[in-house]
Length: 195
Image 1 (tube, rainbow, N blue to C red):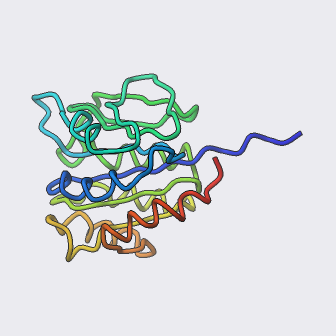
Image 2: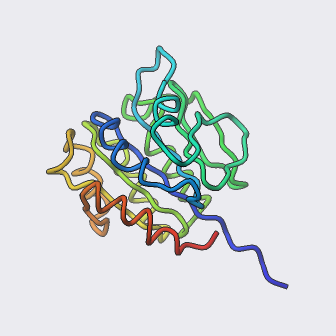
């Protein structure tokens, strides 16, 4: 009897300059992209995020705002809602949390990345993009420690250099790539992961 292969996923974190960076990445994913993509962007906590609506019109792949307790489906981009941490549960469902902000952020990239590393292990790809805080560094470190693939936007190409520099310092084995190169990896190398 063949065992079901463990699922695989991609997690992405970004802050200042996120819309421009994600606009170069997410529309490159084809409609048949087989992996779920979970995204945390630092957004103001006091108003609804419009990221899912914005990217739904730009992407070939399905895009939605994450909902508490929903099963993570293949080929879908999930954005964290404003003022909630986005977590992956061990049974590959989504959990939304109003726990304290991390590094002044809720949603926090570290929270998503660390929970996803626990759930997916080495079948996870973590991507840290532009941003002006150090959020995401420890999360990417956790993904690397679990054996996952770690990618960071080249700091020189980022609107906010602090986040990618912090991620590279915390996870020196991460690959620093341009947005175009990250898109290529997401469309080639991540597809060889079990799912």
